Length: 173
Image (tube, rainbow, N blue to C red; front, side, top):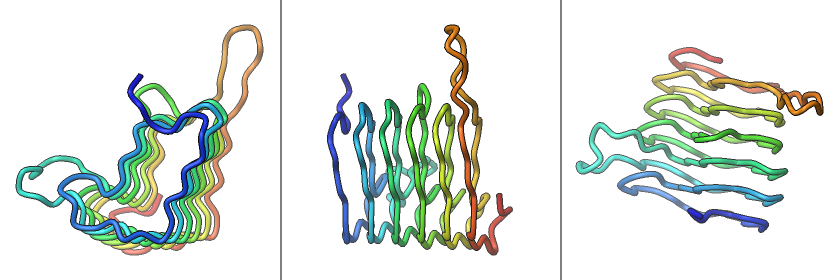
């Protein structure tokens, strides 16, 4: 077991998370009906140490969200990080969960503003964010699909991207 948030609720509210050598926020896992709320934080200027030169350190990194878990990023300012602003990655998959990014300002990061990799049988909401000045896409989603097999049919994923401002990025979506 590699730790993380399991069968729990964690709230990170109104923090200044800045000038760290690697990720500003690193969560290894959100699992088993857990909730993670990241609200009203400033996450900036992370991943810029000389020892990490050439590495891929995001402002906020969340690895593996599954089993009916909920992740909410709301009202944050995520800027000037050495890699992606927010990076949700799954070594296995983001499955049977809900991810919401709403009312954030994500700017001047050195890659995508919001990057989600491997969404399966889940809901992803990208709502009312301002994403600007990234060297990569404003929002990037790599692989989305439903659950399948086992004779039980499939549960599709749902992705809603609405009322965002994507400006001055390498490309928008």
